[in-house]
Image (cartoon, rainbow, N blue to C red; front, side, top):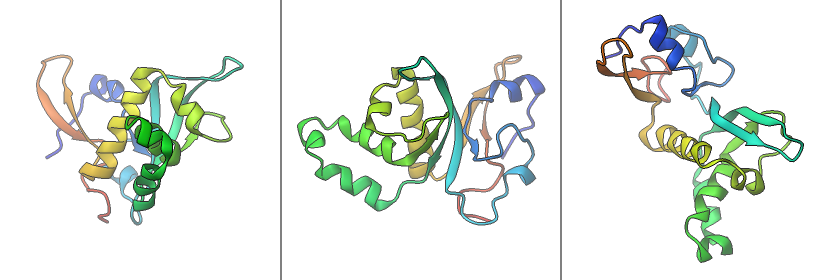
Amino acid sequence: MTAAMSPELRQGLGSLPQPAGQSGQSGSAAFAPQGLQTEYAFLLPRGYVDAQGTVHRDGVMRLATARDEITPQRDPRVRENESYLTVLLLSRVVTKLGSLTQVHTGVIEGLFASDLAFLQDLYRRINQEGHTAAAVTCPSCSHEFTVDVAGEQRLGES
């Protein structure tokens, strides 16, 4: 069940993942995919700062494939440090970040910890849970409820 949102709450949800190319639109019609939705736009909490000092916050993450999860496990860096699996996975599924031409492991390594945690949560939400639901709290009355930021449909449903 999706509850109606106040304008204040909707504004507070601005950093939650939106279907790629549809951020900021409201109503389930804006989120109704023609087929399986495979890409999700996001806005990093802080942003990646490149060598020229440019901050890159907006990006796109695609759904992971079996190959995305299997291939990095053969990487020697993962064998030495299992935590590096996160870096490799995210470098494969984050397809766009600001004006960068490529999102590689060096970019993921250079993210602030809060941005890395954000991307890990987004990855888990769209690949394991199969939805983009988010638990929120109303800033006015402190009522807690769940909002499906992709409309009322689950991934893959039309």
